[in-house]
Image 1 (cartoon, helix red, strand yellow):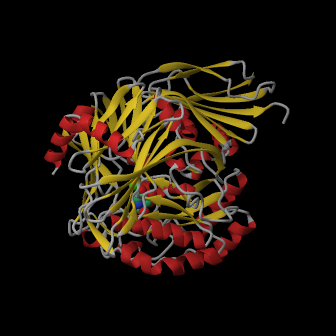
Image 2 (cartoon, rainbow, N blue to C red):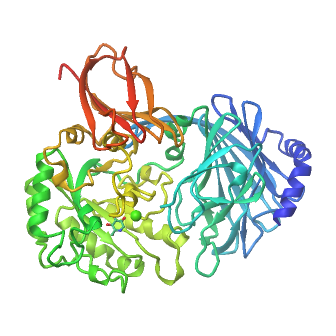
Image 3 (spheres, rainbow, N blue to C red):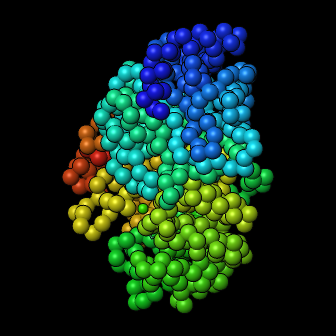
Amino acid sequence: MNQTLKFSFRNLFLSCVCLLLFACGGNPEIISPDGRTRLSFVTGADGCMAYTVERDGKPLILPSALGLVVQERNLAGGFSVREIVKRSVDETWTQPWGENKILRDCHNEMTAVLKNDDGVLLTLRFRAFDDGVAFRYEWEVPDLDSLTVTDELTEFRFAEDGVSWSIPGNFNTYELLYRELPVSAVENANTPFTFRVDGTYGSIHEAALYDFPEMNLYRTDSLAFKAELAPLPDGIKARIPSKFMTAWRTIQVGDKAVDLINSSLILNLNEPSKIADTSWIKPQKYIGVWWGLHLGTHTWTMGPRHGATTENALRHIDFAAANNIQGVLFEGWNEGWENWGKTQHFDYVKPYADFDLDRIAAYAREKNIELWMHNETGGNIPEYEAALETAMQRYAGLGVHAVKTGYAGGFRDGQLHHSQYGVRHYQRVVETAARYGIVIDAHEPIKDTGIRRTWPNMMTREGARGMEWNGDNNSCCIKTTLARQIANWVIIYSPLQMASDLIENYEGHPAFQFFRDFDADCDWSEALQGEPGEYIVVVRRADDSFFLGAGTNDEPRTLTQKLGFLKSGMTYTATIYADAPDSAENPENYRIEKRTVTSADMLEIAMTARGGQAVTFVPVNE
Ligand code: NOJ
Ligand code: CA
């Protein structure tokens, strides 16, 4: 099938374009509002479908196949175009939290309505934005209730080789090391698959993933990749209703690497919020009874070194209240940790006897601190789903608004984390939590496809290979400088930012002032400069204050940054948390400097190897 497709598209592409133009009397293409990116749709003589992408008149994606394979009907070929409809959208929308609270959705859309001999009705919806293109399949198959998906044919055929950044394809975890490889050397990858081809930075990903497996990319030809869907245990990729809409397949583009960070294409492709009152969904900073568990100084299970004891809980709540921190996470508070690695049975409501949940919750309410409950499932989904409703109800009754979920270890019965089964489960948790006024921080999650626009209680994911991997007892020292660790609170966006070390390490530490001052509820953000794997500078504004974070790789680096983002006519006190000259060798060394600046000033950001810099800008007249 694939070989046939490749052959027919290579040879018939031009004649197909002509045929299609003739048949529809309209151009089956859309161009981005800025006129630079063109997406064209073509059907071949056999009714197979393909698309191409050009940027600035040059091919970026060559004719690449479209379609699904299901057991019941032909969803891959025999199609003829019934109608091409085009429209333009330019609207501004707001969200309760995010890198940017006000976003613009400006795109041109083309829907191609097709039908084939099997009576299959397909609406292919294409969109072209200035920051990329996207398409999705909307199927209607008559006389059937459901479809058994065995493959997706979507291809991405690069016109030229380039460099790429990605993690390997994997349907269970994203906690893998990033690789920088020529596009032609990538065998398989998860998305986002970031690339630079002929001066264009881009990223292949997906948006609005619901009730369908995630997409990985598998190389089929030197520069061609095909969508590979995470399978169910019987090898079937998905079971879907006969009327079904897939996730969007997306290709973001930009002139600079930071354009990809600043792109809002993924969010724009998601539906508006389904939660009417979002006033209870609040970005926050938090600490936790957590790192001691990983250091081995404390235990999840009850015993002499138990971390989640009443006494320790109250101590953490006091620390949070005294340091402008809004939440405290408790791991190892509930019964079941003794089953870890065995039955993976957890009780999601019963606290250990030395953790007085009612008293702790009352104390947290009194101190105006949010209590975070941890739900580690150990991959035991059936038991967690059975307990979910009762657990969320209990937490809501205690005044809890945040739950960190965890899925360490394999799912039961050969199910994969990123399969349709997994996607359904993660979504069920989000929607159940929403009904109880609870936000989710998912560990070992399904990747972000922008569903936070529709479900703003899906606040954060701990999916990538995080720094917990670097903190094991065998390592001699922290892997980056202290200033860089501070800068990461700005660089790595999350509305829920954790100070994850033991609180005694923060107590009285001058540099902890940054976290006290930091506001996780930003209104506006911009990635100002950067190159993948090399360096980055990001700025965020929260109310009238700005927070800047910069970081470098193994190279010491001095960057120059214009402060034009500050409000003109205002004077700010800049507090700079910078590397000390010897921070590369002594990563805990740092310096703090205060300066008065305006938007006309320039900041010189000197960083040692593995270093960084964080700056708060507070208006002087405050
Ligand atoms: C792995 C997570 O990385 C960590 O945050 C958590 O403490 C453990 N699982 C136990 O749930
Ligand atoms: Ca982890």
